[in-house]
Image 1: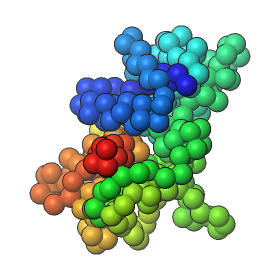
Image 2 (image 1 turned 60 degrees about the vertical axis):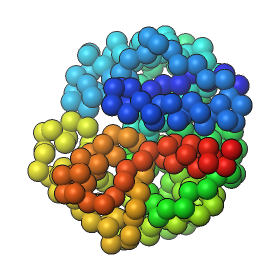
Image 3 (image 1 turned 30 degrees about the horizontal axis):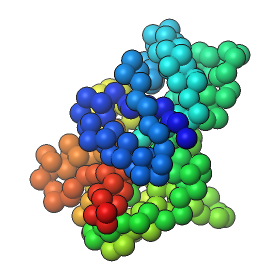
Image 4 (image 1 turned 90 degrees about the vertical axis):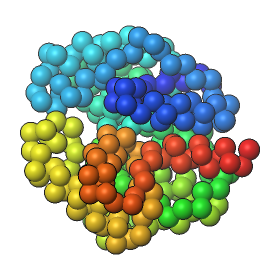
Amino acid sequence: MRVGLFIPCYIDQLYPQVGMATVDILERYGVEVIVPVDQTCCGQPMANTGLTEQARPLAERFFDIFADYEYVVCPSGSCTAMVTHHYDEYLEGRPGFSELKQKTFELTEFLVDVLKVTRIEGHFPHRVGLHQSCHGLRELRLGSSSELVGLTFNKARFLLESLEGIQLSELTRPDECCGFGGTFAIAEEAVSCMMGLDRIKDHEQAGTEILTANDMSCLMHLDGLIRRQKKPIRVMHIVEILNEATAAMA
């Protein structure tokens, strides 16, 4: 299986270890990983602020780079959702676009739905709190929303629960926004910070030692607040946890 790995710009520039851990996990499952060196931003920051024409060439570039891969995988729910839910405005009707949307996956989604991983063989003896990013939850449906009645599921939690020694925190509001929202954190700084502090407080009462999520952007926001408040909580992307846990068993 040949996969094109799409790395969000903030991971590329600030958290390269998340990208490297993604490569390690995929290769551990026998996937051939290609990281196109000419990839750029998906255009989400521009699209979120209404700059449609500035986002369009980035969507077109993404298509040109990734259209021929068997699958496209990204360690970010928001960037994946940008491609699968918001590129229609720029690429609708272009031959191959529908196929590109269908074969583009967030990392945990790819592991569970495509590779059919049912258990991660690893050891991670920590109390972990899972933050559910809005794009992953509401658009990609990586988990069920708490306000809905019926079958519950969560792909990230499913993978984490299979690790030996792990304990998962039980939050009072398991799918509430952290307040980051990309440019929202700049335009509405005070509201964004209050929402983030509220999420951290929920993790504190649940005894979270390590706070994780599918989106490093949410974790970047929460980690900044944690550091400024000098809270004893460590932040890790879910793929860092999976990679560290499986490496310990090797």
